Image 1 (cartoon, rainbow, N blue to C red):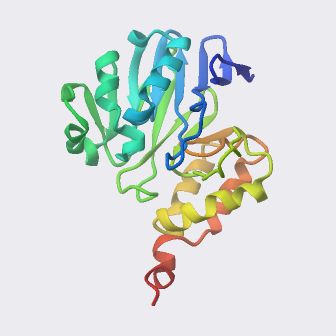
Image 2: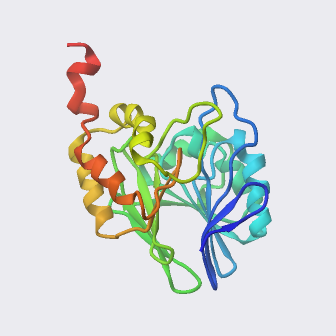
Image 3: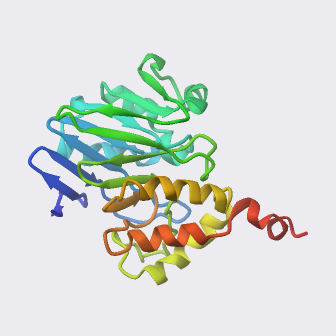
Length: 258
């Protein structure tokens, strides 16, 4: 079921005691600021934030989160990788929630560079991934996505909602004033993804490794950190496109100009 939240947020999955929520956008698009998506899972009365973002968006995201759940009930925060648009707000989130932070073990030592943080609350994710168990007994799975933009990178699969949070995989760059939440026309949307994926993803081999892992989960939706959400109509189109995409080291001669 899809329902409306306040101040731009939208519940993209809801059942009796589980919700998967997109937390909206900034009202005014700023030139030079990369558009980002933040997500909140609520399982019974426990909140889990996925890539809540940098310091710049913190006031908006914290206000929107509080519309759905008290901040003191945010028990987990997941960061897919180390980029500032993903994680530079980490010390701020630690200051307003009691949450534990999950991030690749490769980036733990970088956290102090974002500001003063209680490192005892940071849980490194091993390369093979892991999971956390929620109050209902459901789990969230941390799926390896290494070298797909970051050397230490993870996606999150929520089996209860069948939503995969993919981080930067699936990112799109919208023209000014042309944002939309769900991909309606995949062929048109490809043009907004191709430049980013060709340069920021390591290789077609690594893409195929991730796609194989994701296909085994059969997600109903794939929700990236930038761009629009792929639902049942477009998930398979997206995965098939990734499988055949040449990127990164496949294009070394083109990138180097050789």
